[in-house]
Length: 238
Image 1 (spheres, one colour):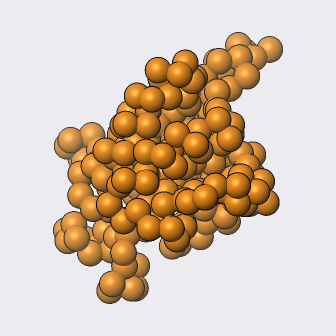
Image 2: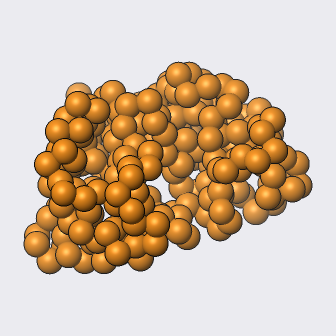
Image 3: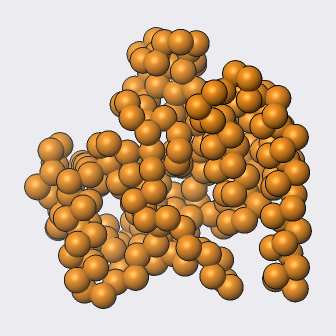
């Protein structure tokens, strides 16, 4: 049954990509729009992760966000219209959104039944991943921007996270948590600070879906690694 469902989802993805990518091809010589559509459809139909389009940039100005805030701190890389609550795994809705906004970044709504994430500065994250690999830890997908890495983990509640962090003597402000009510920018979207988002480790879906480690398995190593990162401090930054 799982194989039959997988084939049906693949056929649906192929039909939607063919239908909507053709209409944008003349305006997308580098294939960026097709890549964003493919990524959004993969998240929605294959991994069952709820996604929505980010607000994007203002016209040809790559530094200015399309939202009304002239001082937006994450230009282009946040929800606006539709809002975060509209995130869905319905591939038809996803295709409709990107047909109208083919250059929109791909955002995943975190928490609930979807993955959560822990993010930290790129240099500290690379150090932590080496340590976790040496310990034999089976990590899940890792999303990377030029400045930060986000390690995807199984869904957790704010109460569970609070208990976990309360037991720590020190939690650097450079360590951030993306849980219920949050979102994460996914590849191959443009990053808010320049460059693009990419998979440092791509999702690998098995019979039970994409494997995600529990947050408890990672937090200690990530706290240790991020303690020496710029912006360390003791205040959590979400």
